[in-house]
Image (tube, rainbow, N blue to C red; front, side, top):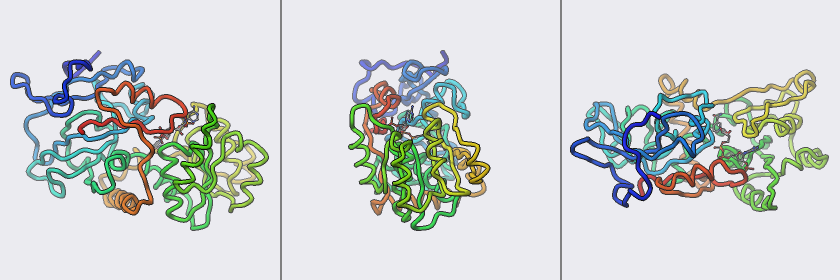
Length: 369
Ligand SMILES: NC(=O)c1ccc[n+]([C@@H]2O[C@H](COP(=O)([O-])OP(=O)(O)OC[C@H]3O[C@@H](n4cnc5c(N)ncnc54)[C@H](OP(=O)(O)O)[C@@H]3O)[C@@H](O)[C@H]2O)c1
């Protein structure tokens, strides 16, 4: 299996080496990171390794100490080799997170030592203590919204933001419906919609341990208008509930299978269903009649592609979006998802928890604390 260097075992790390850049004068500088040298089960192929860090910075580069990074479903798919975006192996895991600028190259403007930054595009490899990158691949963010918010700002809130803004012209008083509503994206959708006065009908999976109540209450507290279970979605009671709202013009689907069928059925004429995830691993199934008689539009959205398409020629659009999201965060209208924190050394727990059903908590790697 390809690797960058020495594999670090849990009991060989002391508190010092856990958090700082290591300098071995015979071998240069190293950061610590979660590396995979082959595709496979993340719990097996990920190893904590020393990763070489260059001594010198190019003029347009920054050196970043990563502070905190989440474990997202797409990170897992990337390591499994099933994601369309593939890094050259060996690769460092993680695509999102927040870091602290430690050094800047001579031509870096708009960023300085001590600033908080987030990567704009996927593929940076955020699960490591230190990285060097071209400064244009990062965006400065305020630390006032807190560590969890900044660490989870780059993927899910923009996905929710673009899906609410770019496909259907939603007006205050309109309604949308989504499944996987307790996911990170779902939580962002609920909060953005509440801030923009759009009603949300939210579908979650029925919990096996009767903790539906907890999830329902949590999402309502975030601003969800209605929260129902998948069971309810497919019952006659759903038809009654939907009558109390303007018929949804927008449906958001990250589940597929029966869940997408149920969501699509409730959309208004000429409504739009956006699929952005496939957590059930089942195909999206839509009744033929919805296409013919209701003129339904079914479309997909991929935030990584949107960012890639806009980073060069439309950076202001990206910056404006993150500015809006941070302003909402500062006003308390957009919060980070519920989370569980793990030291980098305990990464296996984070990985395992992230792949379990019904956890309702984002796993965060605390890299430098
Ligand atoms: N297209 C894009 O640009 C984009 C961007 C961000 C995310 N995504 C995708 O959106 C989805 C959610 O991502 P996230 O980071 O928000 O997720 P997350 O916070 O980790 O939450 C995962 C969600 O998936 C649900 N889930 C897990 N297994 C399921 C199954 N077998 N059937 C139905 N639901 C299941 C979970 O529900 P329970 O609590 O019931 O287990 C939970 O709601 C993922 O598919 C991700 O890849 C896409």
